[in-house]
Length: 262
Image 1: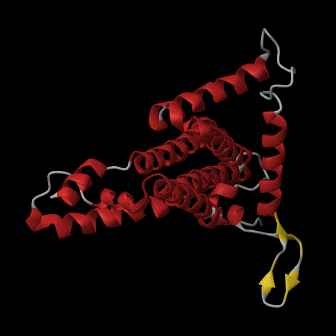
Image 2 (image 1 turned 60 degrees about the vertical axis):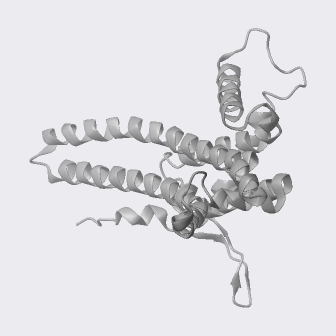
């Protein structure tokens, strides 16, 4: 006899250090542990690119990887936010590396995938959304509401377009988090199901030779999930740059000025 574990069991949050106060639970969980590990890895890896003379003129493999990621994110920020947007590079770079580490560490056996929980990804998207809103109001003030009125819209259907733009203004608040957690969760469930299928074939005895087929598929999926870990971190960061850039540019401010003058 053997126990068949649910594919969703890997996403269960387990309390490591219990800490309760009245009806509030401040326990240190496996999710908290992985977040702390990611921050420590992020901190020590950042020392490789710090201007303290630790780098090499001819970079080694690790330095090549870090410098490549640095240049990759720098180009992303420059293309979407322009030269003036480089002041936001530290946040964008930290966000990308944190998401990448969370996704990759989640592939380690018996670890925990932080980004497989919507509350984590939604919190990150909320921080990005509120941040871009703050920057938009800081730069444009009340004129930022011009984003809700596209240029060249006939007067008769302006209320409809304002409603659509208003809805699209809030969509990234949820869409960023949903896209990340859904892709990570779906991939891990698929890996768990195929791994369980391989184990079932192995212990069956009579079909031992057949387990090489699902194991080959599982091996290929591990490469795919590694790529997804990078792609989803990139997509989240890219969309964060795009929505921030829209607020910094002010959208339809020229049309707003025309309407105000008219």
